[in-house]
Length: 139
Image 1 (tube, rainbow, N blue to C red):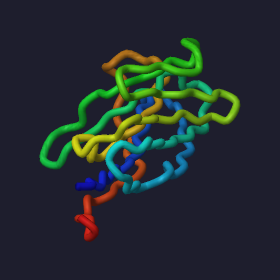
Image 2: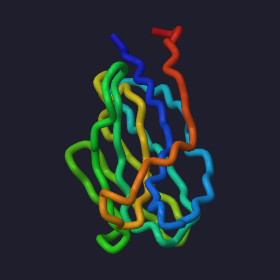
Image 3: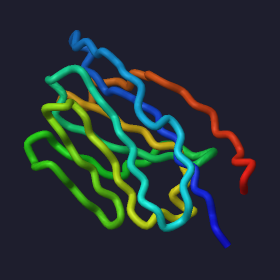
C-alpha cells in the first residue's frame, strides 16, 4: 500500500537581541504531500548576510522540536547525515533540506533557522510563521 507523507515547514529565525534586524520571507513549500520513497525538498531563504549557521529541526505532534541537521556558511555547499542533506547557496541566500527515500516517519513539522553565531544566552527564537497540522483526506 502507498503511504502519503505530509511535511509541514515553519520558519524560525534565531537572532541576537543585540539589535540584529531580520527581514522575513515565507518558506516554500509551506506544506508538501509526497508518496513513500520519493525525494522531498524544503527551501528557506534569509535576508541578513550576518547569518552563518543554518540548522533544521523537526517536530512530531505533541512533542517539542528536535535538532535534525545543520550547515555552516564556511563548511561547503552540502552536509549529509543518512537520508538528510542540507544545501547552502550563499549568493541566493537560500538553504534547503533534501530527504531521500521518504518514509511515513518523516511526516512532521519542519523548522529552518538562521543564527548569527552568538552565545546561547543573548539569543532567542523569533517566530515567523505558524501552521496547523491538517489531516490528509487522501489517506
